[in-house]
Amino acid sequence: MESDIRFFRRRATEELAAASRAITEPARERRMVLAGVFLDRLKAVESATLADGAAAFQWQKVPRAEAD
Image 1 (cartoon, rainbow, N blue to C red):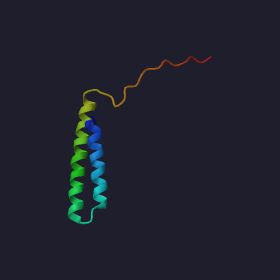
Image 2: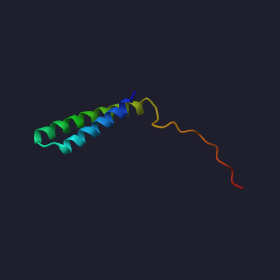
Image 3: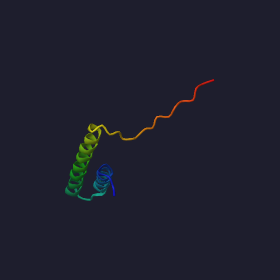
């Protein structure tokens, strides 16, 4: 199953690509509006994730080798 972040990022990218291929101006505008909706949702999900204290990556602490 795809995460919300990945889904919204993928859909925004798809809509932006479709907007660039659109033949008519109304079609281009619809695609841009949809891309904006997905980008807004992506920002909301990312900010909620970061607000919960979850890091984007779970970095492991690796002990450093002592220099000779």
